[in-house]
Image 1 (cartoon, rainbow over the protein chains, first blue to last red):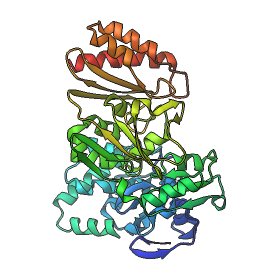
Image 2: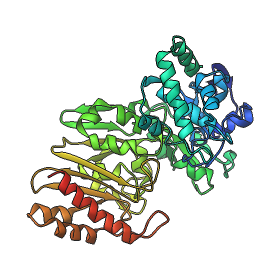
Image 3: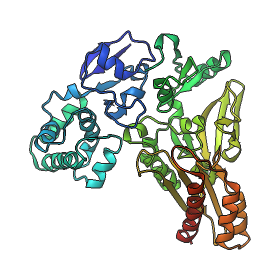
Image 4: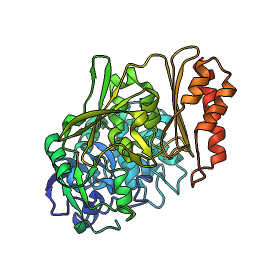
Length: 162
Length: 274
């Protein structure tokens, strides 16, 4: 079974009902995707499938056949939102951070999100360290800078489709 | 995951016909968005070992109008419901319900058909469908049949659906009047409902009202509706509603709380849609 992982074609021999999460971590050795609750509550295992955020602990790998899967590694540590999470101290222990960043990318289409938009976009991601304020600040700043920055739009588009 | 995947068998039909044939050949549990099913798999409580993946059946994803009827494919995701201009226009309270089903990651995968088939008494879309007299379309190799949502469930996690049938669509007749939806949970997003209600105010005395998480199945509040239709006082309708629900104490709430909140929600619905 084949799919596209962070822009590159991959083939997996995993059982069709293996969780996408396990294929990513154990077979593809991409351990940026974390397992938290195993029931779709915490969002630590968030990845993008064809640009849509999903909980990879609840996805049979068979269902991503032919799809584009993006994990945190696909942002190469260079995405502006990743830098803003550091600048604003939107991460402490770091377990929720990859999922937070990927879930926040859904706001790419929203040039001026309100705080409420950000809260809604991240409602499926739990953080037990930061109290969320620093995370919301990072995301709001990312959109504000993307709105005014000359190079921001193409960079984000490429990150999303990798 | 606490179940060895090697013990599991998955078939992935490309057409509805082959899916129905597979269900006729042997008992299989359908998988769509897997957001309920994989939770039980992760926790090792799932007993089924043979599965049928519906995700390739694109024909079940559409949301269309047929005459006066809104037809929602069983595989329409909660995100698709929120984005559908037809649903936004004709059944806005289903959009509200869809926005409160889990986080975005769950809404992107979970399907309306799955919410119905999973048959949890707390399913957020179920009171909406019961209040608007929706019909569930069931298909098997023998053909198609329609079951009113209010007659679909027979008990806790039990329905009239046969093992060789699939839910293919939900049909919603035209809804006139004010639509009203409220979910009461521990927090606005993600929480499983303590009480969830949907109502339609058809006229000064006419209302359709359905309520979830207060009985083994979703309840259409016929007795309360009857009191209001006869011009009875709202307090009389509240007592009727509280007599036709059978809430329990569980890890999310208590029977006492649910009974009180059910009454409050009916009062609010009646006042806000007056």
